[in-house]
Amino acid sequence: MSVLVIAELDQQKVKAASRSAITAAQQIGGNIDVLLIGNSVEAVAQELAKVSGVTRVLIAQSADYANALAENYAPVVESIAKNYLHILAAATSFGKNLLPRVAALLDVDMVSEVIKIVDASTYVRPLYAGALNATVNNSELIKLLTVRATAFDAAEVGGNLASIEAVATLGDKGLSRFVNENIQKSERPELSTARIIVTGGRSLGSAEKFEEVISPLANKLNAAIGATRAAVDAGFAPNEWQVGQTGTVVAPELYIAIGVSGAAQHIAGMKDSRVIVAINHDPDAQIFQWADYGLVADLFDATKELTAALN
Amino acid sequence: MKVLVGVKRVVDHNVHVRAKADGSGADIASVKMSINPFDEHAVEEAVRLKEAGIATEVIVITAGDAPAQDVLRHSLALGADRAILVDSSVGLHNLAYAKVLREIVKREAPQLILLGKQAIDDDAAEVGQMLAALLNVGQGTFASKINIADGKITVTREVDAGQETLELNLPAVITADLRLNDPRYIKLPNLMMAKKKPLEIIALADLHVAAESKVVTMNVNEPPVRAPGKKLNSVQELVEALRNQAKVI
Image (spheres, chains in turn brown, green):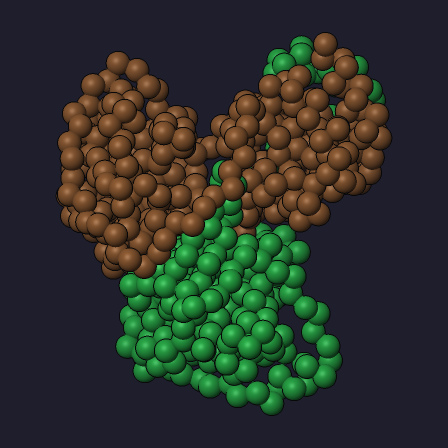
């Protein structure tokens, strides 16, 4: 009985969310194989082999896999799927793009965004932007699930020594081609795994004010920067900063929401943060119902004062 | 070229959904229903393709019972040409719905299939990818921009680290993100006109797709609410609380 975890690359490293998926696999039980698809991934495979709980690292490497095209990756997963009772990936844009394609190739239904493993075939996942939780049973012969990284601690990289084996590559299916990407390199912590996040809303008023108010506080706290959908739509912040039902789901130790109204779709992406702080001039803002510490104040003055007080 | 757009009738995004007292599901008996917001962006994009002279016909489809016709009429009012209701009294799980769409694709032979990236009821985001696999075509999920030229579609996708652009052969499946476009407001005359556009009803049984799923919901409940927080009076109090109570900075 084995579980397969599909790993994801992040700038030639293992994405932390993949190590959360390995933790979820440990809760299911059995041997854990990790599949890594890419181009020249030996160094990453060696890093993966050290992650606790991993039995084998399987690598499928080819120039055809230099970019994560679901059309080319899914057949590789399908080709080894019959060896497993469970196939897991983190519910990142990579995992959510790939796993449903694999499920259809295997003719099985799947379970997405799992936040709790009850037993090997029973899981909890949110519905309606987290307003409800559903307990679902999956009786497919091969059970596919994406798991939300914030709900599972990342498995440690340590003294483990898994074997590394190659699996057959299947070439380019010729359906899709990578053109380019627009990914801003940042010195800040990654949003999905940051310990502290400072998030700005539409009340900031402009991209310039967003930068002027949010960045110094984030710098002071070594925090990632988040944004509401309204702030992204208004052009104050790039899409990869969006927190919420349709952006990144986060659960940091400290979440500071500045000028955020607290729409249900935003709350869905941050309500499991350990400590939530809200600063908003509107005492009736929904965000205060979720905040451990609320401050009704002019957000420009209060944030400046907070940044200065952290010296 | 024909464009097929899949739409879904869901609880309106402004409704706070509660669980039924017996935990058997979401209590949606008397709440406002609307077109899934992501699907509305998909319809809008298809209509814009027609207005640009790229699409020749826009067909919208949903599966459900009679009330599901609402979202088809809404899509027709946005500018779709005709609608298909796959009549099913049982809710279809994602793989079964993808198979229903495959059957309609076989009949209609669209060059482009547009769906919302996820439905805001079950938030699964699976159907588009499943359909693309069943059709053995390319997929452009979480799309914020598309461009069609020379028999190919270029799609910009919103991914965790930023944006990625792919080129796909046609036919292809695209799933719409919210920044793909701003759906138009529906004017009253368009609403009237939509009532006269063709709406075909196909029985689920005629498509020979099994409705059963091996993924079954056992129980639905409301997650625990956060304990009420404190309103503080000053930034100093906040810094004090974060340092000494929460011990988080």
